[in-house]
Length: 337
Image (cartoon, rainbow, N blue to C red; front, side, top):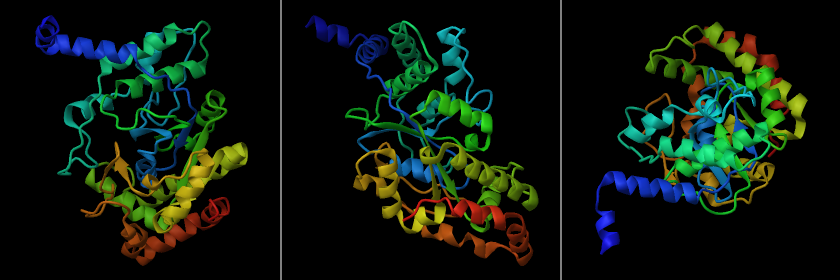
């Protein structure tokens, strides 16, 4: 009766007990990170959703926003700083909004997925993990962060089981040489996955999304395509530098030949193929596509392959002129099916 009385004392006592149970029983996450990165509107969100739910993967459910000072900067951690400083650099502010509002693929979506995440618990787990390490290395800091993130995500449907890799999507990190040097110095066993999308399909999607969120990022076609070019050049450079640790996927293959692509990617990540890799999910629940065009469908949208049909003749010529050479060069490195 005393235990029952204590359990019904109120929210605060329940939350204290919940936090203590989670803190006492967190699971270390020390697996290598497979980073998905390239320019936005290229299929990074789709790929992260296809990886979601795989029993051997800790899949970050949203964009991985540990970048500092901006999300597309791989964070630079000074080991001379205090652990509290490390946590403040890596902490993802977006988790607060996702906890309070739930997860939606787009703000206007009528489907909301609960995301039960306790930031105060994440910080406690982060500090507790590091307390047990005598001589801290940079990899330990990132392991502590991943351990704390997945430990504080309370309704994660894929927390348990034997894991082999952590996956996360952050656009544009792969564009920068220094970012990649820091990433692979921390994760020498890590992997980089980059998706290349036909620029004639990419630009209409980027332009429309740009207009929807009222930002002037891709409004000028030449400036937009120059950003695509830099991303493509980064993809080629990374493949040249890091060889077998880099996998390049053609967006059109991911859409048209999802099965063969995901089977090859499972081999690249050294996980077993599972049918869940064919279905975009959030926390193992089927989810709508993140498209700039009208869509109510779940799963993979074939219409993404025909966005080029909205281009004018002039736009088509500009894109061909600016991207023809580098696009063909990237395609020579893409995953063979």
